[in-house]
Amino acid sequence: MSEKIKLPDGFRSWEADVKIGKKEDKVTIGHWADGCKGCLICVDVCPKKVWKPIEAKNKYNGQLVTVVKADACIKCMLCEIHCPDFCIKIF
Image 1 (cartoon, one colour):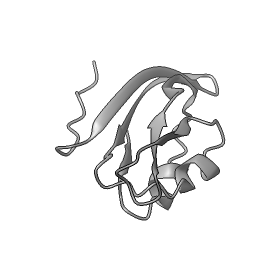
Image 2 (cartoon, one colour; image 1 turned 180 degrees about the horizontal axis):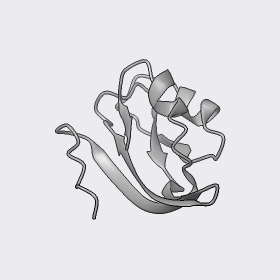
Image 3 (cartoon, helix red, strand yellow; image 1 turned 135 degrees about the vertical axis):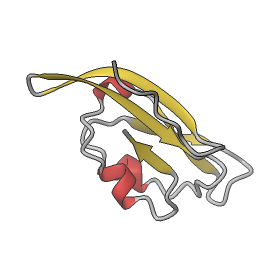
């Protein structure tokens, strides 16, 4: 049994059972919407199209991101590594 991941306050999370190669695993994707400036780097670098832009009129660029396919995540962590504002956590 795996331990429940504690994300920082303000992070929304998605959890999914995933298959990475032949290995079964779990993924927790955390996103801090209040810190996200809608740069869409995560959308661009994700090889599995886990992220999708959504309209957010109160944000800098008028957009934000959300997770649309958590079960497609392969835990490559490219989105977390490239996020300039540290708004993404992958476990």
